[in-house]
Length: 179
Image (cartoon, rainbow, N blue to C red; front, side, top):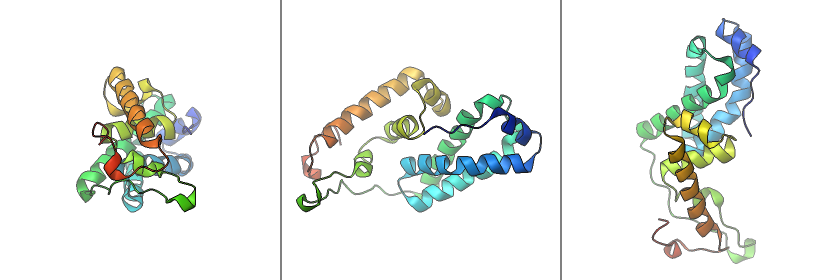
């Protein structure tokens, strides 16, 4: 689900209307948290990163030139805040995949599957599937070429397809090229 903010609200916030800015940030908060959680994989660190992103947006909204570009601008702030939180908190590696046993419908935990992606692949997947951005928009948010984003998405989808193709997959059975 993509964040949609009316340009008129952004213009009002940019010109000092604190109520407009608060409405924007209230609407943006769930998106910020979801993106941060997808990157850092820890709920409390994600909440801190989303809060840092909201505070940064609050302080710097006056500098946004194109009101229509708010979503990409804000997502870029969120991604940077999430990466800063990872560095600051020294987020540990999440343990290998844990899967439900046969008595609970043999379902794989997709969130754990995301942990097997590189941080750049996970970032692209989160921005594409959770935030609804296309590869060009992700490229602008991440400051990388569009082709790089398309490759990251291709690679991530390939890995996820392998991980999710079996209903029960032990960590030791994860193919070496996916680890």
